[in-house]
Length: 256
Ligand code: PEP
Image 1: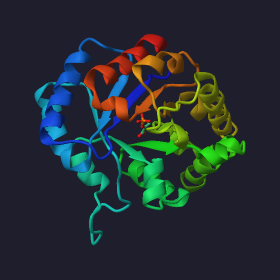
Image 2 (image 1 turned 180 degrees about the vertical axis):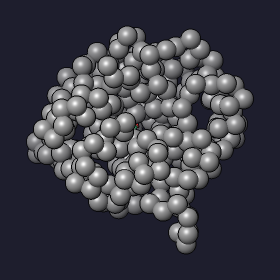
Image 3 (image 1 turned 90 degrees about the vertical axis):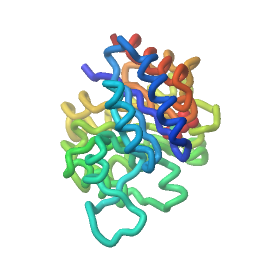
């Protein structure tokens, strides 16, 4: 039985006041909610404050981050390492987000290196994959997702997906309000799982596959009713405690 994971990707949004207010409100909203892992990925500068806020509140919210380097220390100006993230209690690290692929030219191979390095350091990769609008229209979605996953499998082996999280995020649905239908998302999730099952049925059965792309309280229930959708990676709606908590509660209810 897979436990759903609902993670908030705050992207480049935040301030000290916002971090404490949002996490305090979110923690209160989630009181008594079980059956779902809830995680947040603040911008790197605020991971420290987020850790202190969550610890002070005795919160079960999991702390994450939005990126990592492939080194733990050294002459790599501007980067941050798995060891540093661990030092601040961050465990769930987003890699391969389409915004990193697009604005920072991150390749499948580089993302596969990040995946391997996170695993080596005992952290949980939240590994984003997904197709562009043009690829979607050309009917290439399954092939693009398979290629992105194969970069990790070829580098680390299929067993490396054990304990990792895959986030299927059609690029055209991210931040656009143009969410995939629940049926379409389920079809792609099933194809991702089948692709992994061809290498290991056991890994495929256990790996958490989130959907991401304009998830809101209004559409969350429909996604989570699908058998292969195990939670969500949430951008915009994660910046509001009530909306994000409503999505997490929908996941807990649907998978109970
Ligand atoms: C994201 O950034 O991963 C995302 C899914 O954003 P949004 O929910 O705003 O579409």
